[in-house]
Image 1: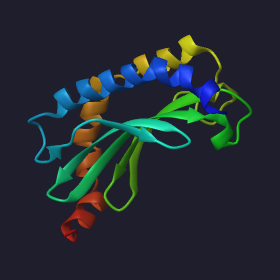
Image 2: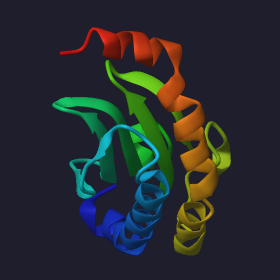
Image 3: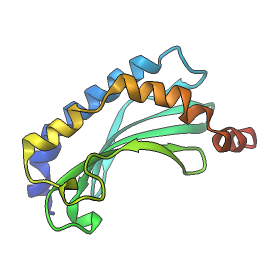
Length: 147
């Protein structure tokens, strides 16, 4: 998908994704020992809104909310959304991907894409991060040897 096709979707969901991550940061603030980074946007073929939980110079958990391009993911047309929770050492710790691995995973319906972002339950995600992701045994073992 070229930029002219992708851009209307990005313009619609970027503020929604940013608002969700701002709400998530508020849910996590003061409940973890890690520093919360600023929210940033970026990307090349696919754009994302992200922030990290950090311990000094080590990224403990990266949180990326991504607008997927069907063409980059082996699908015919449209876009999808996903949120990845990636721990230190590229450890996949969870995420959110409506319609993942189904024909409905990608859509050209702008309102549907926005709804998928809006349907992310921030409170539930914060609970998962605090009670599951950040207590993952493999993550904690890897962090023990991190500089």
